[in-house]
Image 1 (cartoon, rainbow, N blue to C red):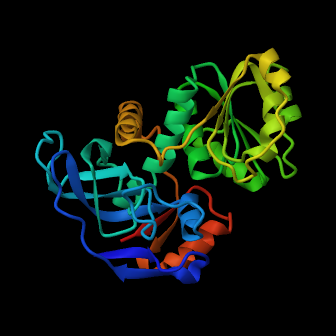
Image 2 (image 1 turned 135 degrees about the horizontal axis):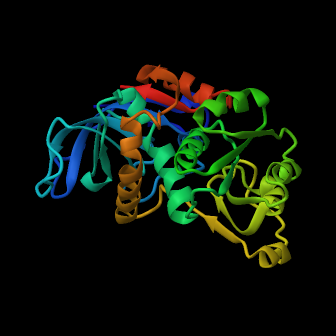
Image 3 (image 1 turned 90 degrees about the vertical axis):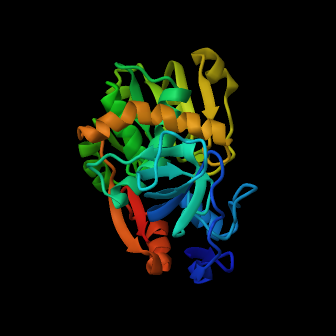
Length: 327
């Protein structure tokens, strides 16, 4: 089968499309999926550079964390799926290949309303967002959430999910242009923060109360402003570290406000944990995709042979939403 292959860690020149062995035949609880489209995520860029190796059991040379396709073969013991079903799912790696062997419990049937390309833009962003905002932070109707990097795949997914649950959505981005586009995805209040300052604007929007939940894909450079922006008993969930991983921490603020600070990552979790996150997301979100309340946001589509150009575009930070590879 053909696959994206990292022949040398570093720049895009180290990427190629290579023939690699097909996965083995599925056994009990496994499914072999013919991949039709796969998302390209920041984690794939880091893996290409040698900065984010795949966990044990997955090749560090074949990237890819999400995919959409149809089931080509099934191991024994799965009564929920059948060969030919259109499915999407998350994985710890190797999704950017023509076939992937995966645990059937981490697969979700694709709604009839969505194409493979659209579906491949859903799993990583939406399951990450749903797990962070709902499972980890327990957001409720009537609460307020602040989403950093609102124009990213996870940011747009979180805005839609929180809006659908009845929460008020505030978003930040470095540019006003991206924030304007976010409004159609559930963003109600926009804060352009090219200098990383947003707490005063948050307090003005919330009449001094602060926000109940912050979804942070930036990290250290936003940490102090995050603490100032949270309400009493507020929850901060850290999902990304593009702004650094080390920050000074005023413990007194956390004590005084009774804050919860949570770190999360999806890739390194056990299969059982991923299956549970997948199930919770599907139960809440699939009906909303079917009726049009939620929708994937595909920014640009590249063919597999255009993998270097896809990495260049994703790394430029010009993308709005998801970049997808079609196989």
